[in-house]
Picture 1 (cartoon, rainbow, N blue to C red):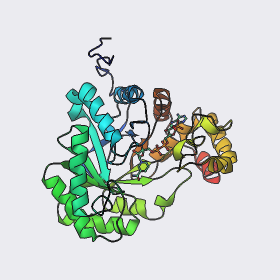
Picture 2 (tube, rainbow, N blue to C red; picture 1 turned 180 degrees about the horizontal axis):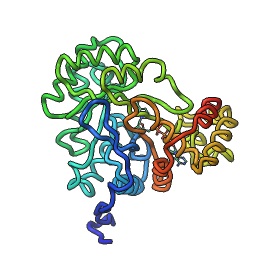
Picture 3 (cartoon, protein in one colour; picture 1 turned 90 degrees about the horizontal axis):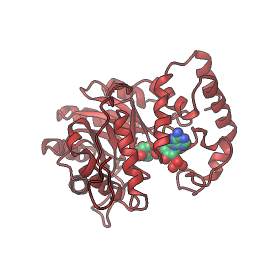
Picture 4 (cartoon, rainbow, N blue to C red; picture 1 turned 120 degrees about the vertical axis):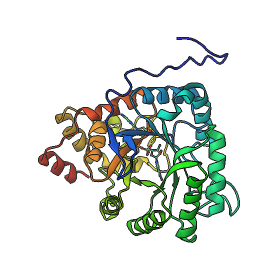
Length: 336
Ligand SMILES: NC(=O)c1ccc[n+]([C@@H]2O[C@H](COP(=O)([O-])OP(=O)(O)OC[C@H]3O[C@@H](n4cnc5c(N)ncnc54)[C@H](OP(=O)(O)O)[C@@H]3O)[C@@H](O)[C@H]2O)c1
């Protein structure tokens, strides 16, 4: 390994066999093939985190065929720092692989002070993407999402901004996230009229959280749009991490806003049962949780987070056992 600068960063050369194990899935009716497992940079990539650890996770991901990376303007903390750290890593490691990567970012939550830095106005979306591109050192993103619906801005304005972003060459495709089925269908009509390639809906979906089965997946199938599922491991609950209690370095121990200790404790017996089912299938719980999603309608990719290379590698093992018996599916339903 060569050291190529004074801070001790080693030179990165992607593994030649990186496309041998990953499975690629078409997103809806588009031309885009996404890796069955994608990596999100919501956590573990901010200025509060160790940049070298993040770099190693990204290198390992690309070596495993994970071509799709998911960011947002507000990932960090602080806001913007995941994009900035990604930009630093991209410049050193991935610049020559740009055309192999499918990079996403989003805007929709509060990002900067005042009325222009939040929700779904044309002003916010276009300014935010300009900022994101600068932070990441990119000329364009592959997909730009509106991160959440805005009840007070006309959908025509938000979708019109997405259309202009594509026309300006700042994004190749567009997506939406956290939209309900009816809003999704309305967005699809508008984007179709404007001939904008709408390829993805990013939605929370896991064995524990199945709201998308109530109309959203049907709406996506009807419109030829893929679903990329976030929090597939229910923030770590659907892994073997909590089977023997709450480890000190976990999200739940840190009383993380979206995963409190109590939530894990309340789900513990289900987690134990699911871990047993996974074990009988010859998998870990995280592998089974990912495989389960890959069998669901409209799912184009399972978007995971990982705080170590070891977690990432374990999760990739999901691809070794994707099939389920009816009996297994029933048992999983009982514990969902
Ligand atoms: N569109 C939206 O509104 C939205 C919302 C949330 C997330 N997202 C996207 O979805 C991505 C994934 O979301 P998420 O982080 O909530 O997903 P997740 O995959 O459900 O949770 C990831 C966490 O689970 C734990 N974990 C992962 N693999 C493990 C393993 N093998 N063994 C033990 N623990 C394991 C780690 O937690 P520890 O840190 O405790 O080790 C890891 O940080 C985000 O990065 C983001 O890109 C989008």
